[in-house]
Image 1: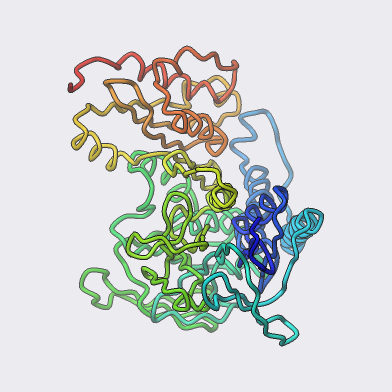
Image 2: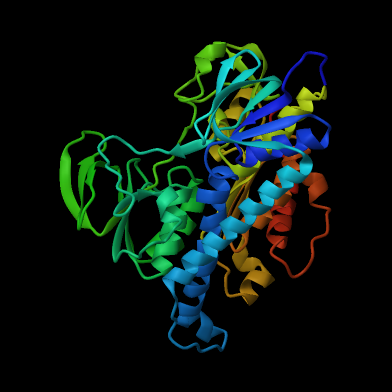
Length: 484
């Protein structure tokens, strides 16, 4: 790629989905590539995140379905009492992780990527240091370097982790035991998914949320309907506006609860276990970023839309960053997209990322998904850009497929511009919401209008008609009472 005498054309630090896609894409385009990983290949998603958690959700979801006597009897089905084996459910997740990790490793090897096991760091411009697992420390050179070190669970002050009675999602995916009563600190997507798993397997859950309402990051209309099913309809007690100011491991685990605003002590809970699901923080502190003059914002590395690392809007030459460490959308598929875009720009193409069109999903039963702008952000855009915001709702209870499944409790909210019909965002709760959102994502990526989308024919009877109905409702409002 360059006439300079570099060890590699590209070195990637971190082998999660962002680093994996970057390394594979670069090698497939003829670059000499090395990837450095200090832990397991595949990063958080494959080993401690989305892959094993979805395996647990799949198994526990089957248990929930078979145990729902009322639902099954409505379909004329009568099942015996449900039995499950915790160890085999855990092994299902472990085996899935192993298979995907091995496949990922083999893919890189077949692509010609050199895999280096060790801890990577920057040692100057176009230089990467690595301390290998055998203790050898060496410095390599590369024309370009991509940082893809991901993130780790955030543990707030006052909480002591022992990995057994007080733990993060990193430990929870092992499903080593089923506590009779577990407190989950945080009600974002991680907390919700594990609450889904634990309640399906017979555990009582207390959900503790520091902000004023449970599920604070989700659309308010979605929360109204989702919380009825995912929280109120299950063995879950919630405490909002409450801070878990101190958590001590043991039997029982002791939790000191304080009022979030005043920090005044409220009560002490004694539970069997605590899952800390309070978000994630970037894994950047050991990268020796000062060697190239990079400053972080709370540990996050600043990048532009081409994935180039920046400091105060100034580009650091030949240095790129992708994935959770950038603090953008902390999702595996975002990291993968960023990795490919970074390499395309290294190859001389001019590619940027469109975060608005990247969907997100929570794999509860039923699922929650979203893409594009929140209603709050859409209203702000409406005020600043002088257009009228359109909002329509489409309900699963009017959908033939959902009714056939007896799973008709669901909602889609669609946000759009009334002047030209451009789709701005969507939020869905209901059966297979994670799959349905992709159609809206594709529309946003192309900046399409609901006027055109309303003419697209959807298969009947399918859940996709929920989206079709929303498009048609929105199209009927385009051009009416819009600001000019």
